[in-house]
Image (tube, rainbow, N blue to C red; front, side, top):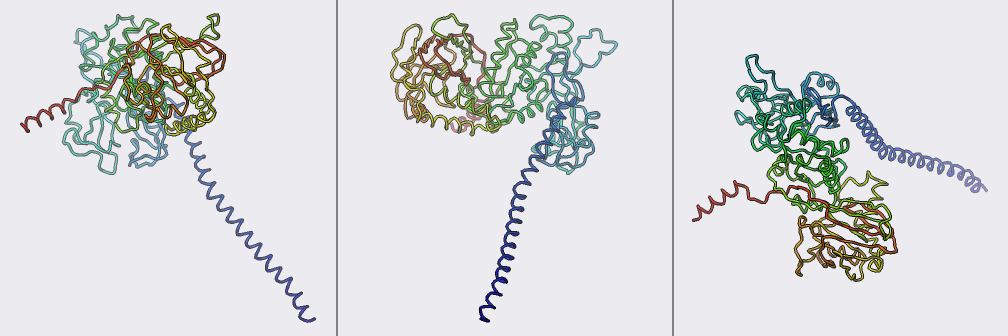
Length: 597
């Protein structure tokens, strides 16, 4: 009995100890859960807070007087107009251009290279002068007989400190900006650098540097705009009157950038181009239409301007449409030549013209501008795609302009699915690899679904008025350029069979068929040939009794019964990289041959 009583007394104590241990464990688990949640959520909250703070700061800079180079010809920026950009961390040792103190974060102007911390931003806006896009020439001396006589060449505009890492003094050849303080100078126009003690030994006149052929001198813009306001000159009159302000073999470059293309590299590239060129020559297409930006060409010599489009094939087509508008409005003498810096996803047009499948930062902006200056002019056929609802022309047709290709079938279905997905979540499509992965996903899904099968029974094809007998197909693609689908030479196929030559400037279209999405994948890796249906000057397709996806240059839609007629519209003047061997290489090869002999 005593043993039983002791056990009964011990059991409540054991239960109390067990409950105490359980509460301790529960408290420990709760603390661990709290600390884990804090470790996970705190960085996320801080990141979101910093992002919101940065977005508000950038919005405040946009609304301020310093950002936004308006391209209205009557409201160009003058002196002390900075294009401020905010950064949370400078990528190299940086010193404030106002107080001279080291700073980790703050604002910088890509046009002139001035860097300031938050507390000195207002003083920098008042005291430090930026690049002047438009600058009046100095007043003529009283004894000067003709006011239009050539004025002295513009002087250097020096900015102190925060020099590029790899540089050398233009006077002594030693490296500049090595000391841990705000020291040494750089000219914002010719990009020459010099020590503080060597600046006085340089010539006072600025020749705009090695890229002078691409830069629009600010004094030229001022005189040309003033003459335009006084009266409307004849074409080419401005060059004859103000040629003394421009360098020899002058061919100014206008940069049009789409910040939403591909890898979102355009924002960084715009800053680098603003550093090298006149800020008025760099235009963000998010804030200015291409037609408005191209009006700058009307103040430049006829058939001299070159345009560099930074974006995808859609951006290039947008600019070419604006050039067509210039033709329709009587500005054909000011039509520029167009080069491409590929920042999109597919970049098939850029690949065809020789500019590559995508820019990855492997070459500098100076080399890009030099390639545009040295590039060769070529022509690009542009086509009109007329889509008429139904079989007869009672309905008003919808007209598209085609530069690359038109397709119906699995290729258009993939583009349609990608387009709808990007519209729902545009923030996910900021990387070229992600975009191609989404295309691959939809192509793989269509291999199983086969939503476009039996196309040959639903469509009729005519090439130059002759009806073509179709094999069992799922898609038809009409090509104007050599590349398709992000780098595939579709008309060429595997290259093991002879095929008629194709060109983007011969006025002919190449028409091919595909058996499905899997066949498209085989053609991409050169394991199969397309079904070559022929070449023609005019293509007509009739969709009889079905609803099918269609696309023109990546612009997809779903189309019911209709007729599609593709005819030649016009030709655009494009620029391809020069294929000529550089002069230095030729001289080196000849010298080597002389030594060997």
